[in-house]
View 1 (cartoon, rainbow, N blue to C red):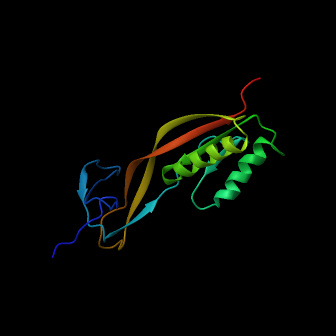
View 2: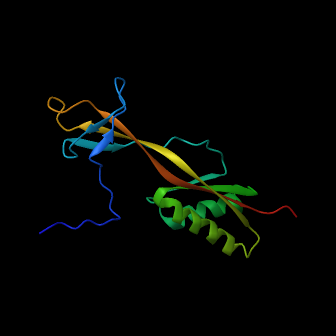
View 3: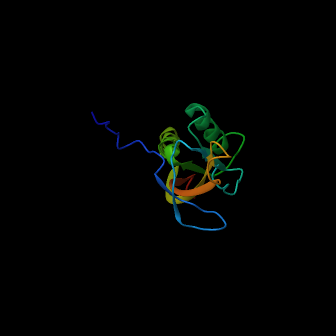
Length: 151
């Protein structure tokens, strides 16, 4: 019997471009022999009115932080909500919730981008396997400006 694969699931490709000092050719690898380590994305400039949304923090806590920046202690006329990958939907939901609770006083301006991420492929057994490799991949990002329009 053949094993069916879910098209939405991603696996390590069998041919991974190796980015080492000596060569940049495709290398055959067995995914069992390597451990995938995902690096953190490159840090964007952090301003006081930037909010980076993730999937680990509670949605209500992130929403409350945005509301506090706009209304209470922050006193900012605009904030920028950033979401990467899976957190794009959450960033959009936060921006829409802010707009809905302001009774239309807030406006939104969204920009999308692509962020290049780097993964490290480390051999399970350093004696047997080859040298460590890196792999680059692209991930979607969204940047939503939430602001009060000028009167």
